[in-house]
Structures are given as structure tokens and as C-alpha cells.
Image (cartoon, rainbow, N blue to C red; front, side):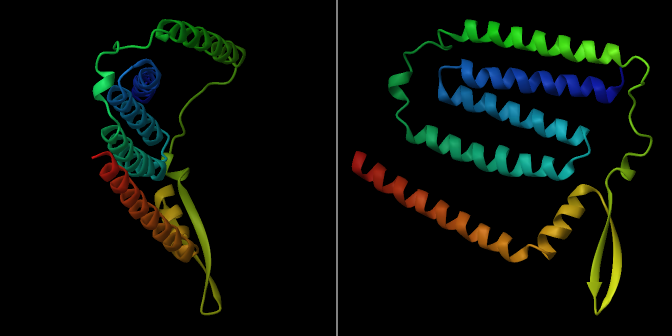
Length: 194
């Protein structure tokens, strides 16, 4: 087993444990921290698969932005009355047992499929950069030019900021307006409670 495979199994285990923690913990803050572990593990898996753009989106948008939103929501909720409740849900053991059974079924199917493919050797490509090289054709002053970009992040950003710049900016303005509206509505709600 290579280093990348070992690291994949570590990150996959962390993602599964984090996902189980999201539904098993009773306190919302513990569930949010488990979700953070799960999202970071998935971001690490993206890096292992040479998907740097998805890694950046996962860290910036989900781990950064969405988790901050969840934590603000948790802070706005009255958590005092939940302090007396148990640490785990009462049905966590049953859910964990069902999860282990599903893992065993899927794992046995994957192992059986790999055993059927004994003639084919699973190996990593010799040159990973060849997988992430993209040639973009563009028309400049009436003539076609080819530009080679390295990595999927550069290819996505090239297309996003060149071909889809206006929709990207409009979407960012909509998100800014939605965020300001959420803050205003949340402030009004808190003023009524006080």
C-alpha cells in the first residue's frame, strides 16, 4: 500500500467519523465541529485526486463560509435549555450499527469487484500533470490561438473569469444582498426577544 492510499484511508475514516458525529452528538456545537472535520477530510481527498479547485472551494466556501453561518445560527439559538440533555442521542447506537452494516455490505462488494479484476493491475498514472493539462482555444483579433493551462484550477478560473465574468459578478452581488438581508432580519428578531 502506497503513501497516497494510506492517506486516503486516513482521510476517508476521518470523514466517516465526522459524518457519524454530526448525527450522533446531542449538542449542536459538537455536531458543527464534527461537520468541520468531515468537510476538511473531504477537502484532503480532493487534493489526493488532483482536484485543487474543488479543494479550494471546499475549504473557502464550505469549511469557511458555511461553517461560520452554522456557528452564528447556533449562537443565536437558545442553547441554555439543551445543556441538561445527554451527550449522545439515545438512538445513536442503532444508527451506528446500521452504518457499520452498510459499510460491510459496500466494502464486501468493492473487495469482490477488485478480486474479479485480478488480471488488471490498479496503478497510479506515471505523470499526474498530464491529467490536468488543458488546451483552451480562443479567438484573438480574428485568429485562433491555443493556450495551454496547467491544472484544473487554472482551467476553471480561465473559463470563469473570461467567459462567465458577468454572471459571476451578478451572483456575488446577489449573495451580498442575501447576507445583508439575513443580518437585518436576525437583528430584528433579536431586538424582539430582548
